[in-house]
Image (cartoon, rainbow, N blue to C red; front, side, top):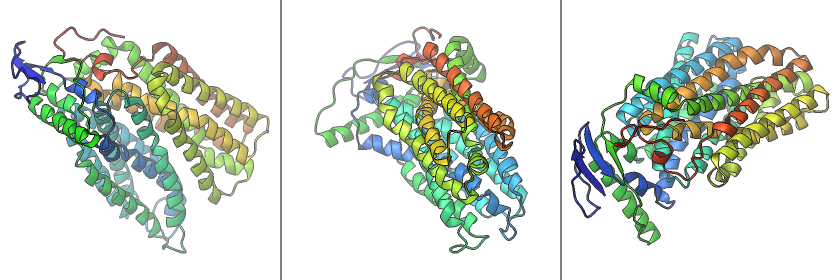
Length: 507
């Protein structure tokens, strides 16, 4: 199904099912690989990809939540680590965010250059090593260093994994799969909250042991994921653009045989082909020109979505514990239970709404979830400011807001991974992720910490309103600029830079 030539020529086997030869950089390849991948029915092969790649978000949620919950334990005398509570929630958290931003950009560039599979194995390896070394921390500087490196690995995962998922999952299912996988962060957050309650109970584990075992369990989960991930294939789309047409053909043919054996039906013939000129890599200048000159409206859309969701989440989650304690008298030891409920609401949003992003449409659902969550947070701020809420009803309001916000936030990752050309995909994800993470992890706390910690009702209501305003603004941007990418091949949403026809049309 691939014909190969050089300098614009075409050749190869005419029967359409030969693997074809490889082609070095600069040669041209005509291939049906994208169409063959997109017309595949859902199968066990796709489940393997989802399990192998998607579970990393559970690790991220586990990491972030565990560190927040064990901060007070680490600072206690006898914990085995000379560190203060402020250092854990301040310096260590900031370094984790900085590591995630840096890792996303570094590994995003390497992923586009050296392939999805090689990098998603390396990034998980970095995470595992850094988490294991965190568990044996003996000083503050050691803990800080390996929190940075843990974030470095997790940030790299976002770029490598999202690009691989979107390039392997059929276009019919791409939106729902991406949303649920990104939303699974909150399963990790739930697990982290409950795990911390158990592991920090001194009736079971000594003061200087429980927090170390918490990190060690993250390593065990990561090792299981690594074993599964070894079977996940490289992206055939990346392979043929980088001159590995024969390998791409063989990989897709093997998946087709496996699915035909599983379903007992012969697959339909693919309906289109694409001709591209192979390349070894894409330079930073070309990537920047593509994002901001060829697709300026899509770049604005990506920035708006990531910044909006980052500020809404920080408006709620940054000070939720202190809000419950100061305004509603909830014991500090019980806030983890409330957070578990909030995290469950976050996961339900992408789980229950994801199908609509593929059926109703991207523009309607992205703008709708952003606008609705922003408006609901405005209403929550108004009710809170008037003293009409208690701990239970406030948590219920947060759950409803974040039910829609979580689906919207997950769609931000989906958007930037599908609306730019394949050669720039991983770095585009990394760039927008880094901007959103920096906004949420640096600017957000600076703005919201004093407001939520002041103990003044009006200040906390203002924090909610700021987050709601940015979420509504992002929803309005999406209403005008969101790309109708539902059920469309990636190559139709954004033509590869390597395509032999004209370059990107812009927008």
